Amino acid sequence: TLNFTGTNRAFNTFGVTGGSVAQSTGATTATEFMVGTGTGTSGSFVLNGGSITINPTLDGSGNLVTVGSLRTGDYGGTGTFTQNNGTGTTSSGAAFHIGNQGGTGVYNLNGGTLTLVGNDNVLGRSTGSNPQSTGTLNIAGGSFQLQGAGLLILGNNASGAAAGTGTINQTAGTVTVA
Image (cartoon, rainbow, N blue to C red; front, top):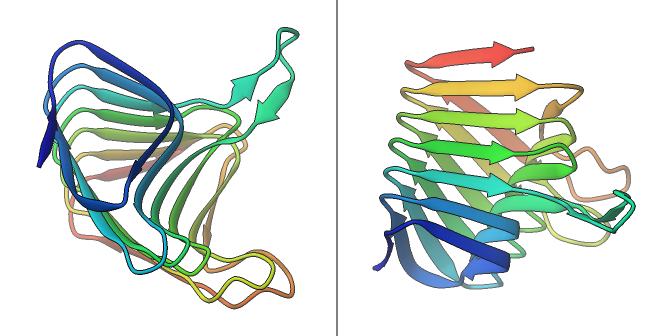
């Protein structure tokens, strides 16, 4: 297990293609954050404290260059993201995709706060000729917040693509749509 501790980490792209990563303190920012990405890979990430923020890339005039994304179970991989504490945020212009492009992904929210601001956020997303994806969001504690004009879509939303499967299981915690 790779352990993130200390103050701050900033990545353009961060991927867990095998094994596990855990964060207990500090702030992590990224444009692309992938857990279990690539055919046949398996990865996990555990957030025990601190924060993870996913931001898009903007040019000098504030125009969108790259959509940011947090993807778990990506492009044929299997990924699990477990949030026990801390804060996870996808800012406006960033997306949350669990089970993406043929992947199988699980996001376990056990504590802390997960906030999605704007954009299309999909559990079980596939586009083009990519195979079916499966995404599951388990809420067993903490706070899940969908803000702004954001959407949370269960199953694929792209026409002509393989049908995806999205599931939300809530046994505790709070869900807020604002």
